[in-house]
Picture (cartoon, helix red, strand yellow):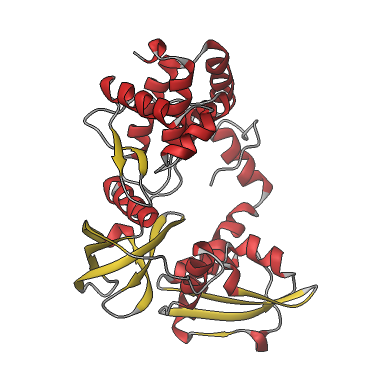
Length: 348
């Protein structure tokens, strides 16, 4: 049992859980013991059921491998609270994540010390349940885990992929990173079959399989994976487009239209250009609700988008007219519906 281990072995186990591979010399230096002592402690961990693998060669060392059972994890106070809070608020675009997170949280809370359980309970009282707004596509958590490991280990993977057109093909890629652009998860990877960087939606990806072949990491043609995803999404072709000049600074326009950085460009401190693109015209209509557009001659785009924007405007106009009917009509309706909302809460 964990409590029977001496303090040094607990520290050794903690180190093994924080990094994939440690050399014997590194562990000996960290713990202030000899290499021979490290070897004995590793053998003791193995006797207790911890699957510690040993490798040889210039890059050899020790690592905590996957076993039949999950070994006890050593967490400090901040790590335990952070995990509990993350589990409580897990509503990302991963299939079944809410139910799985609830089960994991229940197990974690059972073993939390009283002082930490109180912190988690305080947070839960202030934020009892997350609101699951997103109803978009969800990714398979097993596929995410496999791809995350492949990104970490720079291991080639293969999978079947369904493109937006409906066509399906198999790919062999060098995975680089996973990026969540709510609610969609994307895999940034180098496509070895076409010799180019690609973006793959994980919800369209099936049968991922590691190949066991590792390669040196490639340099991504962007500052980081998130910037690469944002740039590719901004440049992606779409059925409907709209370009406009907006009398507001770029930060304000991005915030009010929920646009990717590449869609908004500043002209000066008070004016920006906005480029919107979507296959669903209602998405563009929704983005335009939060801003005022500039002169008519600065607005350009897909002519087929116009009737959809007009329909959205008519719906809003009808709602506005209904709210401005004579006072006596409003009063009778308020009475019929039990008066106004005392809490003043607006609903999405």
